[in-house]
Length: 250
Image (cartoon, rainbow, N blue to C red; front, top):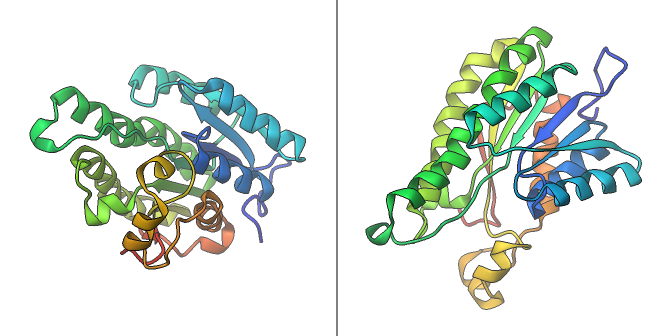
């Protein structure tokens, strides 16, 4: 049974994907749309790219629209969530928004530390918290947060990023305990080296073979496949988990 089946209303279940304009985010959006969800593609600086992802989904026969706001801005996010909820509950949220701003911690300034934490961790709270009670009233929901193998293993120059993403693990496990009796699951997907975007710039083929037991980079679609499962009815008993998609790195 796919993710949007089981809905008693005539309308498909709605899925908000933050950071939906990037490579992994767009793949997740496409997967959820293929599974029957109405997808809300979020962008911030990349509103045009978010609109393009939504348009491509519609052209493929799915339903989608786009929104733009800064998840680190509490007031802007609250207003955006209120507008989304005015059209009914959002049954799925995929917290994929995140940024890198790498530096060794000895040379990292406070602004660089805080901005990365603001987007990945505070953004998770700003987006997810307003959606919880409507999910609870519907007694069905799926919360998936995209972390990183860096949160599990650490990575030089990414103390800020690893800290922000690792914090999602604890928050998610706690949230799973709070919401499980309402038919709501909360899980983390932690990708490793995934092709497209930043990974292509950071790792050449030789380095990938050294780092990854599978000997290759993963694809955004491989991450999206796991997210798609976690958002489905079939995954109702998978809760509070951190699932690596990393070719055996951890």
